[in-house]
Length: 178
Length: 178
DNA sequence: CAAAACCAACCAACTGGACGGTATGTTATC
DNA sequence: GATAACATACCGTCCAGTTGGTTGGTTTTG
Image (cartoon, rainbow over all chains, first blue to last red; front, side, top):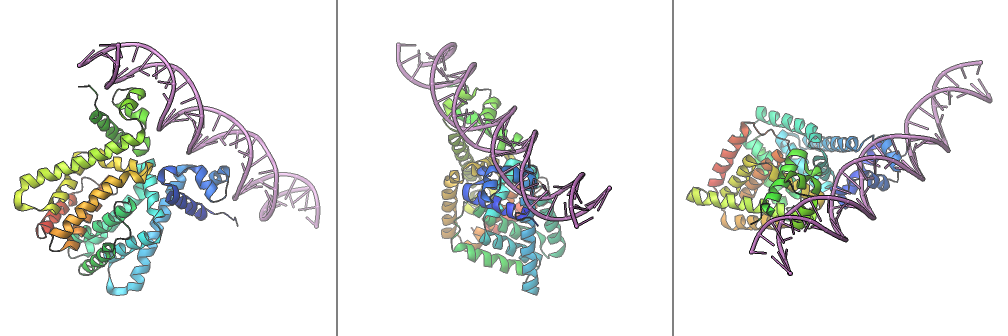
């Protein structure tokens, strides 16, 4: 059992992005953040790309977990659309470090977003088949993503009270569709 | 009148981002793209930050121009919300190089987004004062941004026919609000 | 059982190239 | 002939990845 596992490294990388910005996400910085030498870091992730991939996969998994959690607890109060909207807002509140990884990744190599792209396509097709008004569902999903990315990119203030109101409104609109 | 003006350099920078990705937006690459030496490039923009700033300002101006154009031609068929939605979709169709600059900028230094942030705030307050249902207006605006960024980040296929349908639907919904 | 072989985890030092920026010219324009 | 518009050469730094180890634990083997 190793003291530093891959999860810890990913967390450290997220922390670096949050503190110093996506451009400063260097192997040295990540190594320093989790008290490892660069050599040790590269033992776990043989390239920087591999680390970024792992970060994205972790992010995807985290979001899926949040959505499943909500679906389980909320029960019948929301379908897949509501779950997705919820998970996006939950991601925003928890730690914005995670979605910033997305920025670092897309700056490094847009091809890294492929897993996200395919997952997004899956969600879309799910909505298309299960909603009375698929177009509206996609619009609501896009609105959630717009708010999400607006915050990640820093074009919206995070503490604006309008945020919570929009969140509620989105869930209400989603409830009418699912 | 110089043969190479700042506008041409900005276009070259956008081209580099489109062809090679945000991470490869280097001064050398931009200089090569517009047939200039790096020294010559740095004569026009004394730092990389200055270039990024100019790129963002150009993007903002371009979007404003598109919105104004639409407002003038569309006449009474749409208010400020419809104009904004239109300009976002127009930006997508023309050249996706421009919004990618945004990625390069935020990766380099999130503070560069300040002008975009303040402009976005202005648009928001405009909607808040002029719409019967400001919350819905913001949601529609967010949806447009979600679709916009979804395409920029490459998580949505650009040629999906659903895109145009969502565009029309958004404009219809906006017309009921303005 | 104990020595030998093996292996994952980790580290320090280094390499080679990229990159932002500077210094110092040279040429064209007014 | 002064200033803007370039070019050339160079510097220091950063950074991904390599090399060549060491260590501590596990497995294999005589």
